[in-house]
Amino acid sequence: MAGRYESSTQAQRRGLFGSIYDSIADLGSLVQRTIETLGDMVLFNLRTLTWLVTRLPQRATLFNNMYQIGVLSLPVVALTGIFIGMVLAVQSYTQFRVFGLETQLGGVINKSMFRELGPVLAATMLAGRVGSAMAAELGTMRVTEQIDALASMGANPIQFLVVPRFLSCLLLIPSLTIMAVFMGAVGGETYCVFVLDIDMHHYTVNAKKFVENWDLFYGVIKSVFFGATIGLVSCYRGFHCEPGAEGVGQAATAAFVQSFVIIIVLDLFLSILLDEIYLAIWPLNPGLFAG
Amino acid sequence: MVSAEPIIAMHDLHVRFGRQHVLRDLSLSIPRGQSLAIIGESGCGKTVLLKTIIGLVRPQQGHIEFDQQRIDRLSDRDLAQERTRFGFVFQNAALFDSMTVAENILFPLRQHRSSQRASHEEEMLARLAEVGLPTGVLRKRPAELSGGMRKRVGLARALVMQPEVLLYDEPTTGLDPIVSDVINELMMRTRNSYDVTSIIVTHDMKTARKVADRVVMLYPLSRLDPHEPQIIFDGKPTEIDQTADRRVSQFVRGEAGDRLMEMREGMEKSNDSRFRLP
Image (cartoon, rainbow over all chains, first blue to last red; front, side, top):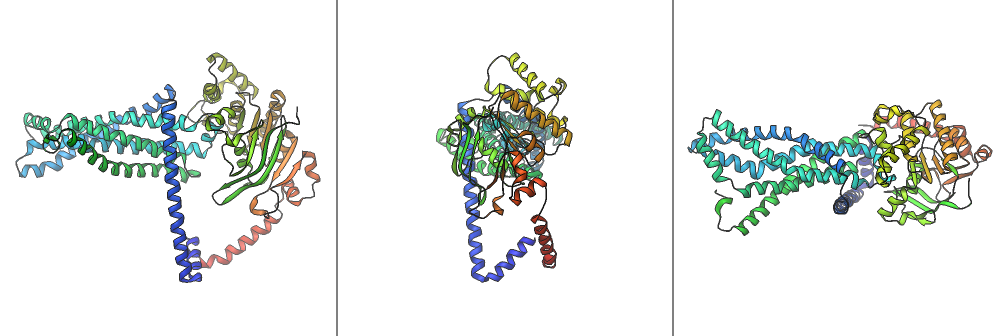
C-alpha cells in the first residue's frame, strides 16, 4: 500500500508526461515478462518431450506416480460422475416432459457425458486433486533445494520428476474419463428409471441409439490433451515456484486455474476439430447431430 | 595434500538475476586438495558462487574451468556426468522427503552405477558409519530426523560417489554449538580420509578457522563502488585477524559497525514517513 501511495505521489510530481511514460514502461515490462514466461514454458515442454522420447523413467517411479495420480483419483471421479449424471437427469427432465420426450433423456444424458462432461469432469478432478498437489510438491522441492540436490547428483530433474508425472497424467486420464462417463450414464439411468419413473426399456433403446463408438473416442481423445495440459502446466508451476510458503500456495493455485482455463479453451477447439474430422470421414452420417 | 595445480578456476565471472548483479568480475583459483572457506555476510553471493561452480547457475560472462575443461559450456548430459565428481551438502540438507534415509543415500549410486545391489548397500553402510549414524535411521524419513542428523545424512549422500570436490553450503547454520563442532570434525575427517578439495560457504568463523586452510571473503555488490573488487580478503585463516580492512575485521569479530547507524537512520525515516501512509 505504501509503495503504491509513494509511486502515485511520484507520478504526480513528474506530471502528466511522467505518468504516461511510467504507464508505457509498465506495459512494456508486462509484455516482456509475458513473452519470457511463454518462451520458458515452451522450452520446459520441449525438454519434457525430449526426455520422454530419449529415456523412459524407472518403472518403480512411474508406477508410484500412476498409483498416486490415477488409481487414487478413481473414487472421486466415480462419485462426481454418478452425481453429474443424476443432475443432468433432473435438469433435463422438466424441459423434456413438456414435449413428452422423457424417454429420450438417455440420449441427451449419455451424449453429454460421452462427449463433454465425462472428459471435462475427469480433467477438472485431476487438475484439482493431482495438478495442485504436483505443483505444491515440486514447489516445495524447489524451495527446499531438493531439485537443486537432484541436479547436483547428476540426475536430470525434468527426466526424474516431470516425465513420470506427465506420462501418468497422459496415460491414466482416458481411464478416468471412461469411469466418469460410465458412472454418469449409470447415475442418469438410475435416477430416470427409479426416481422419475421413466420406462427402462425405452430409455435404454434411445440411449443406445443416440450414442456411437465415435462419441467414446471423441471424449477419450479430448481427455488425452487435457491430461497432457495438467501434467505440463502443474509441473511447470511447481518448478518455477517463488520462495516461501506463499510461493508454494500460489504455485498450487496457479496450476489449477491455468490448467482449467487451458482445458476449457482446448475443449472448444478440439470439439470443432473433431467434428470437422467426423464430417470429413463420414459426410453422410447424421449421427454426429441427430443419432 | 594441496597441489599447485588448480582443480577449479574462475575467470571474470558475472552472475545476474534480472537486474540484480550478484557476482561481478570474480576470479578465483582453487588448488586440488585445498580446503577453502568462503565467508561473507548474507546476500553477498556465496551460495550463488557455489551453485555456479557446479553449473546449477550459469554465469552471464566469464568462465569456470573444472579439471581444465570449461564446465559452463558443457551440454546438460556432459554436465550431469561431471557433477558425479562433486558432492554437495546443502544448507538444510535438501534430503528427498518422499524417500527414506537409505533411499536418499543410495540415490546417486542407483542413478550412475549399475553394479550389484549388495555392493551399493555396503557402500551406503560404510558412509553412514563414517558420519557416525546408527543403522536404525535408515528406514526413517528425513522429517523424523533432527537438524544435525539431516546434515550428516546429507554428508553421507554427498560422499557416496567418492567425489573429488565437496561443496558445503552453510554446514553449521541452525545447529547448536556441540552439533556444529561434530559437523566441523566430520568435515576435517572427510578431508583427511578422502583427500578431497573442499569449498565451504559459511559465516561461522569457528568453522572457517577450524576446517579451512584458506579463507576468501566476498562483499555484497550493493555496498561496493563499481571499481572495487568483490573479494575483499584472500589468505590463511591465521592472517584474517591481522587484516587492516575494517569490513573484514568487523565481520570476523561479529560487530555491526556502520550497519547500526544505517539501521537507526532507516528507523528514523520510517517514523517520519508514518503519517504519509494511507
